[in-house]
Length: 313
Image (tube, rainbow, N blue to C red; front, side, top):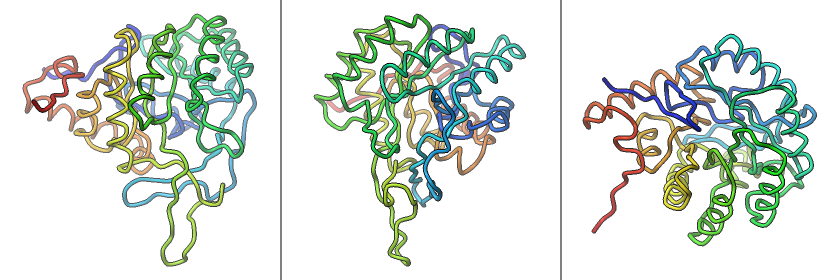
């Protein structure tokens, strides 16, 4: 019997596939659709202290090989998501959920986590350190000293289960440096990767960009980023303490993609661009495809192949 079940922080999930924050999770309607699907769980949109309209439209565009977006963190505010998730949790006491949040400075991060604590939320929090599409705001995840300072301050004030979403890194020394920082703190997991920031896609006929914010610059997702995502997952799997698990995100649209993320060391995976294109029914297809691959290889559970990527002699 093949099982795609997994655990994050000793919390059980019947499946290892879920949505990526920012996709199909803006409001109760979208989150409810995820909850009724075969997804393992859901993570909310990254909630801020106050609701945000985000960047002007058009701000998302699908391409043949993925997508480009500059959403600007449109969200209903963290309180909205906490109220909804706590309500859903009461209805499904045996299911575990994720809430994502992001502040624009460390003081806001602390306030957001205080809000989580006051709400009584018992699930897992994802602190987004990778927001590449807010004009005038740099990606926190590329400022290593700031990441260190944020994590130190956060864990002085918050004792719940906490993971961080990271941008993609492209240099071996950056994997080393970031892993050294992450290993200092009682993190539950890292989520790797967010979109590759500041790509540009052009409408050839119109000789024009395809999204309005930032003169067309936006985060790249989909097929384009899978090799980068796999590299980040495996690099951190090699470097992080075993207590810090990895959620792999980037370029997942088939069961093979899920398999490869887990082979590289992910305990769970999140789907973004492909979910936007296909809708929540994608989780059934991806699960069946992953199960078929596992059966063909004689694997019964994820731990049979998780992190067991082979190298050439």
